[in-house]
Length: 319
Ligand code: TXA
Ligand code: MG
Image 1 (cartoon, rainbow, N blue to C red):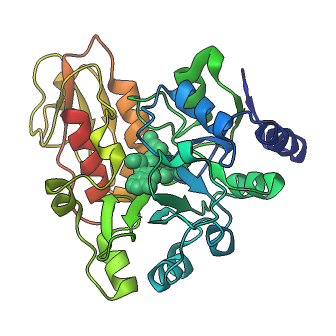
Image 2 (cartoon, helix red, strand yellow; image 1 turned 120 degrees about the vertical axis):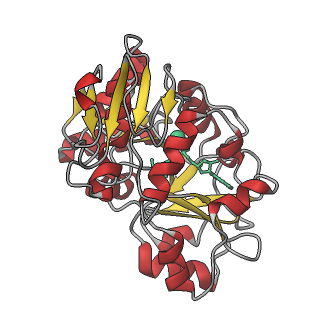
């Protein structure tokens, strides 16, 4: 399979594939998604099978906006305020399923809640419009691989099994959306992303529970309990020196590092820009994850703004 430029014809073809119960990989501003008709049990099962994803890990349902979301979930004033401020964009809202919700049970792993997101990427929106219904889409990687931020990553991961893939360069954000649970009283961030706890608190005028607190209790997001991206070689965080054979994942200036001794160097952002670092993270991890390297030494990333989400993904990679 090769990737398709998202011409009107390719979008119409992709919408036809979705209508027929097939799968389509498509770009979003966060990462590439592997989409299926959310109302079709067999289409959704195809997503789980292709990814090798545990059936207990629910999918995010993609919609054009609040109007479409309200047909799927019990909308709340909090959801309305957040959607007004952050949609379309990198925020996923977990809400109780509406009584007449048409989404297939398999998509939400049988849970009474549903995760909904309105992506901002013009190609994702064009696909949603051409298809005319909700699209269930996890990241388009095999389970355990980093999320794809280019169409080439999708093809590399899925190989001959790759479905029709719409290509539109690199995902600008590069990290998966923030997942916010609004279904149980106080809002809880289940996954850190570009929309930060501070953004959410500013919008709601209330404190969302930060990630760490959620993890300590019963896991509210099934995905957090499952296998996530782990490179084949060891990952060492907050490195201030490169050890023999290691590759260096740098951030900012390497002036005080022995970068010359590294087996390979990839800099997330020479300027020390966290947005640029987020956009580069998964591609650079893929590039450095080579059996020839003894490990990946990662320089310190500040725990502010989207740095929280970057450090969350790095901590999982290092586990
Ligand atoms: O940016 C993104 O969110 C990308 C693009 C394609 O939109 N999608 C994505 O999907 O990252 P995925 O399947 O890789 O991650 C979905 C996360 C998982 O951690 C899953 O457990 C959680 O959302 N999730 C889905 N439904 C949920 C629910 N009802 N309650 C709690 N967590 C849920
Ligand atoms: Mg994923």
